[in-house]
Structures are given as C-alpha cells and as structure tokens.
Image 1 (cartoon, rainbow, N blue to C red):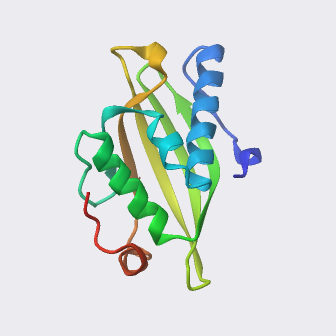
Image 2 (cartoon, one colour):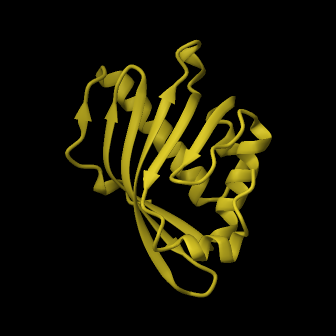
Length: 154
C-alpha cells in the first residue's frame, strides 16, 4: 500500500471524522492486500451489498460478500493500492485509487477505480459500511479475471 500518495484530499467532515475514515480505509486496504477475508467482511454490515463495476451485485448477506471477496482473491496473486484521493462526508467515504494487480502468469496490470462506501446511518458508532459501489473500466482485465477466478457467481 502506498499511503504517501494521498494528495489533494477533500475534507467535508470534521477533522476527527476524517481521520477516523482514513483509519477505516487503511484497514480495508490492508485486509484486501493481505487477503484476510474475515477482517475485510468485519468492515461491513452483514446486510451490506457490494456492486463491482458491471458485474452483478452481491446479495445482502455475509455469505454472498464472502463469495465475492474469495472470487477477487482468486483472480490475482497480489493487490496493491495506490490511493489518490479521499473525500469524507457525513454519509459516504469516496476513495479514488489505482489498484495494481499481479496475476498468476507473472503479468501485471492496473485499474483506476473509485469506490463509494455508504456509511451505516442507523448506528454510525458501529464503524461498518452499509453499501459499497466500485466504479471503473474492467475491460482490459476482464478475461484474466474470469480465466483465473472463474465466472463471477455470488
């Protein structure tokens, strides 16, 4: 993870809320980079839904999110995040980043993505998100994702 790339950060929340959001984002990125399924799933409500680009959304269950995450972990040998921008509001955390992908065949590619995390407004103190939407162009890597992880079924 390349945390030194945080720049041009938009702060629309209190400084304390912004810092807490950065800690949460770092926890998510570390869980993904270390391929720690439970640590990642614990960042979200069990009923949270994940929408990854043009692929089908997960069901609002922990099990469905687990299948999605396991699919993601299969398609790459490793991931590395390079955050570009973080915006924090009362209802969302929006992360713009490059995701470096290292595939099993030794090739590599990168994706420019924007992820919007919807905060759990019912119990904000839970520090869990209620919805995730990941936007970006997967067209360059989609065939490799399916080659290494199989069809996206969750």
